[in-house]
Each structure stands twice: as C-alpha cells, then as structure tokens.
Length: 194
Image (tube, rainbow, N blue to C red; front, side):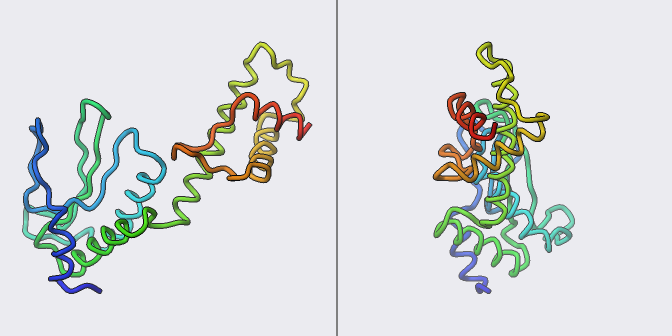
C-alpha cells in the first residue's frame, strides 16, 4: 500500500478544477479518479465500473457530516449529453487515497483495469451487435429467408459462435463500441452455418 505522501503525489495532478463555461457544483476538495459519458466506449465503461467497485469498501466513510469520502456525480453536457465523474475527497482515509492513487497509476501504465470485466463487456456488446445486425439483415429486400437454419435465437447463437471462431480478432471491434457485422459478413456466416 502506498503511503499518504506517495498517494497525494499521484492524486494532486488530478485535483478537480473548474472547466470553462461550467456553472454546476464545485469540487475543489476532491480528486477526479474516473469518469464516463453517454458516448463512452466499452473500455471507459469497464474502467468506470471497476473503479466504483474498488472504492466500494469506503461507501460509508465520511470526511465530515457534509462530505463523503468518495462520490459519483452526473452532470449535463451540451455535447455528450451527460458526464459521470468519480471523486475522492482530499481528507479521505489514507487507505482510500492509496487505492485511488493505485487506480490512477494503473491506468497510466495500462489502459484496462480489469481484463475479465472488459472482455465480458466486449462479448456482450458483440452479441447484441450480431443480433441487431441479423434482425436488420432480415428486413433487406435481397434476403429471402432461405439461409435460416431455425429460430432467430438459434441462428443468432450460431452466428455468435461462427464469428468468434472465424474472425481473426474474434468478437473485438476496432472502435470500442462492440462488433457489428456488415451485410457481407452476415451473408458469409449464414451461408456457412446453413
């Protein structure tokens, strides 16, 4: 565990500062430890939720009667709809400051806090993308249904298996939003599983 001095040295550059044109609540006694917004990719969503999980042991900690040791806020934003931020108070227990510093330091060295959580979210997004793409594909004028090998659920399960086994990068996406197959990829997969 980091000492209080080490933790504060890592956290200090992450102290909250008022953004330009910002008129909401102010947080000068807090460090920004994580955040996400409406358009965040899978990686940011994963890291945000893992950060919250790692800070959970201090849910009931208070600095004083008015200030929690850590908190999450949501604010409106004119470009991305909303922004959610995780704050840790400067006077939080040393153990919490050390954990927040570990999170920040970990993200500076490697972009993923929890590979298992990120991979699970990426898989879920890919499965949703394949299901959505298949349903949209069924509505195309060129699709006559002859490639179907059973119920939609069965076909979607077969597609997920086929894509995970036959794509060089599995169900990963290049834009961190989840794999979504093209019509050509769906045609190839449907022909293969027929």
